[in-house]
Amino acid sequence: MIQGLDTGQIGLLVAVMLASAVEVVETFTILLAMGITRGWRSTLAGAGAALIVLVIITAVGGYALVEWFPEALLQLVIGTLLLVFGLQWLRKAVLRSSGLAALHDEDATFREESEAARRAASQTVLGIDWFAFVVSFKGMLLEGLEIVFIVLTFGLSAGDLPMAAAGALASGAIVLVVGIAIHRPLSRVPENTIKYVVGILLSTFGTYWAVEGLGVVSAEHHSLAWPGGSLALLYVLVAWVAVSRVLVAVLRRPETAAAAA
Image 1 (tube, rainbow, N blue to C red):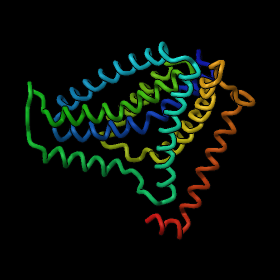
Image 2 (cartoon, rainbow, N blue to C red):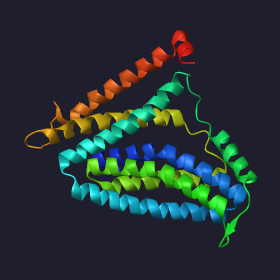
Image 3 (cartoon, helix red, strand yellow):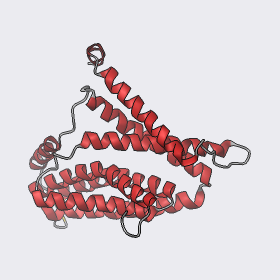
Image 4 (cartoon, helix red, strand yellow):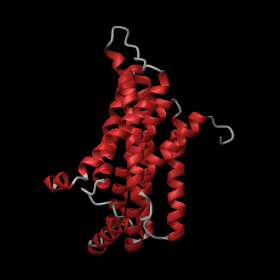
């Protein structure tokens, strides 16, 4: 156990770090391509502007959810959102594992972004290369919004938003240090494995909290209780793992692959 942290906090920290890792790696690839081809000043300006927007969204969103939503409704909303995102991630991981979708290639993404940056016309506004600024801002903002969602949902559900934010920041710091050290896209990161694990986690917690939140429609408007309490997370997790492995096995069959193609 990390000194000063209990098991729940460590679990929250690790879960957010893993869930954020894929988005951080994809953001780093975009920023690296822009920085090398168009210049780091404009790239960092765009990324910094997006980061300010993300901090504001996190603060306002967290306050609004805590202050305006009763507990059961908050669980239902967060659980449903987690389940939607989790199933999207799990779908991608299952299709990639079964061979029906190509694995994500950070090197290819880097080449595409670099080529687009080289072809783009040069337009300077207040000393800032506009193309690099906009692409960096958009990349940081879009990928960052998913991280904000992860931080808010995990943090609010665990009742520890600062620890969830710390997990996202730690993930970003690790990717940044490694990326600067090797100065190339992080193509060796096992993205599909991480996406699969995170998809399972999001789907598990989403199911758990969404079902608890269904109590908002009851007469008392209190959260529902799972049989066995928090232990229910374990058999929900096992159920999602089993479903995903069955899907991979079915989709790997030649006749299924041919029909999908």
